[in-house]
Image (cartoon, rainbow, N blue to C red; front, side, top):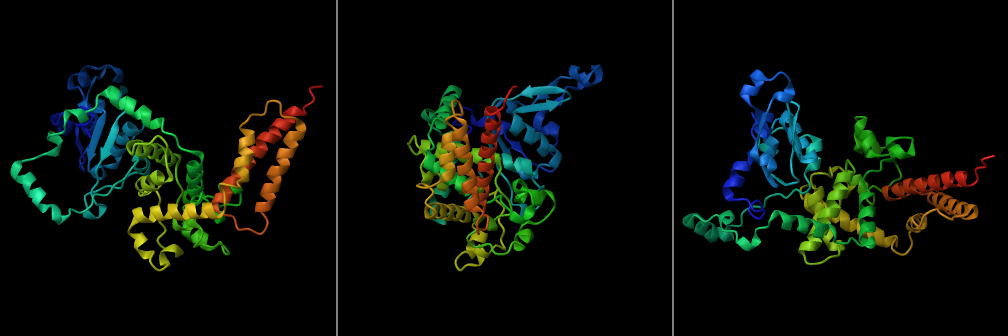
Length: 396
């Protein structure tokens, strides 16, 4: 990928960072000039010899999980905010594509990766085993001294301007409403945990986690819920906003490189497992994995996430939400704006919201998809209530 971005093989090899247990922040970012350390009257007078790789548009970190925790924090700042800081000196870095490799944690010599850094990694792909049927090709490469990175055709090398244009074209790919709704429905399955709190807004797995409690044990106390149909029962957590951003951008990218300008549901289905494989924590004790034929999903996390999405889409179709979704209708009205809306119209909309909420509360167990709809309708109700108070306010 570095060669495709216009760098020579030598530049890429010199710019690649190799994680090891003794790696320091100075190894990663650069070092202060020794003469300045002696002569400087203040930190601002100390010049830093920044590492050249910080200015590259493709940055590679090999075995990043062998980097000590303190140095991981510096790497997180660099990946997240595109700047490096040392001795009150700040280096602004260009936007870049990051590629990181990791060792198997069971092999030893690795550090725990801080959660924020793990969340910065957009897509995770596990290397597959070598197929011995291609042993002859491997032998040919050895005997000929062939290296694929040294024979990339010039026609495939992009300039910086071409890469910027490519990124803009990817972002211009459309995600249709019906595809977005299925993504929303899927994502809303996981965060809700009824037993986590008494206050509606805090009934989430994140609340339980921050309190040091096991969401699985709390969920066991919630009797009467179909834990086999509840897809959220298969996970220990929900999804962050960064995860959602990654899903949307990479779904656009996959559609673009497949030659279309509209994201299809298949694009989402194929990209989801590789975005969520390290983000969605599996509850291996969930009833789903006890069903005949599902035990393999405990190990096959890519297949498990793809199956989750398929089950979510099946539930979406079963509920007929494309044809009848009151929340979509209410939001469509609201997004037209409030200018010119009369008091009677506002009160009618408030009644419709309250009737919808009342219908959901009658004899039904609350699930994640309905929970998010309730929070959304509470938002609409508050906006209309505030507008009604302004509309009926008597300045005298």
